Amino acid sequence: MRKGLLTVGVILAGMALVAGMIWLVVTMAGDDPAPEEQAQTPQFREQSESSATPEPEPEPTDEPAEDAQEPDPLEDREQWEILAVEAAETMTTWTPAEDFNQTEAEFRASHLMTEERADEITAPERPTTGTEWLQAQEAGATSEPSVKVNRATSNEVVSVEATWEWMNPGGSSLSESPQRRIFYFNFEEDPDDGEAFLISDYSWETIR
Image (cartoon, rainbow, N blue to C red; front, top):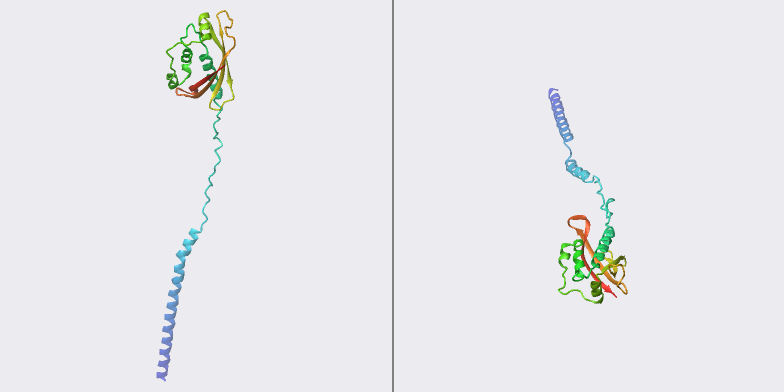
């Protein structure tokens, strides 16, 4: 009888021990995440961060700013024309009894030019000749020009048409017909006054 009870006790103790070991294993397994879950967690976090929607960048535009305005090529033309008319009038006003040649009038207009262009004026060694010049010289006459802008030119050039008659001191004309000359002027900003201009180059042709 005692032997039977001892055997039953051993069996129950063994079962209790096995049950305790099983409970311990289950408890430890529940505390730590499965290896598969541990491997997937960082990857999932990285994918979540990389899948965040970035803020769209502003698209570049070729449209000019509202305040930006293209320069008007004709904005300064009025000043050019005033300067051209004054120069043409000065360069066709002569008093042959006082002027050695026609180049003297160009020197009188040199203050309207850049220094570089004014330095290019070269007077011939010989005096001006010709029938009308010599007649005006003898009579003490002076040329009286009439000038007007010729608008059939490009935006960068101002053309001026000048005609003149020889008038004697009494006010009568010595000219049988007016003489005519066409001037062509180019301009650049005055380095001493950014709002003013000077003649940078000019040429002319005489029309008979």
